[in-house]
Image (cartoon, rainbow, N blue to C red; front, side, top):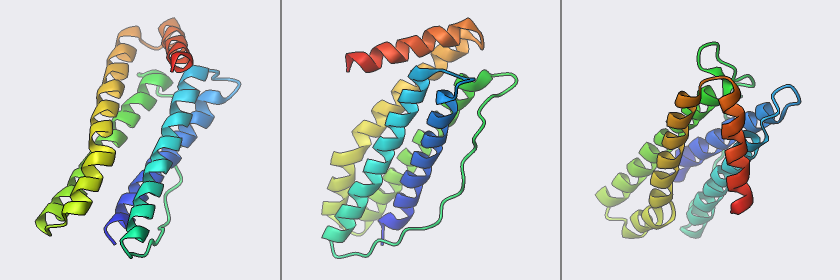
Length: 165
């Protein structure tokens, strides 16, 4: 059951992103670009978990879902502000997910499971590196703009990027 732990990570990350979506979508926060970014990120992580489940079932395994912890519901940080704090958390979650993927691939390679190693590499690793780079850039931009009006401009940029996709 290689992917039970991996599914747990993907679902946990999805859950945290969903909480971030709910926070940034609140009427007293009202940062729609960040809300949409985290909503889409949540959906993507859930899709990854489902891919692993389908793969495990295809290989004759059994999926056993585990409990996941309730995520934070408040993301405001006195020094960093909410946008930078949430984006730094997202970056750490993406790096954790990447580590877990690399571990699954290493176990597959160690056990000569070429099919699993290929599944991880072809479905997840490149996308994970791209996500880490994009979120790292967002963190850098948010550090530059600070907590004030610049966050609103950053949020508008995210909204415009979403409209362009």
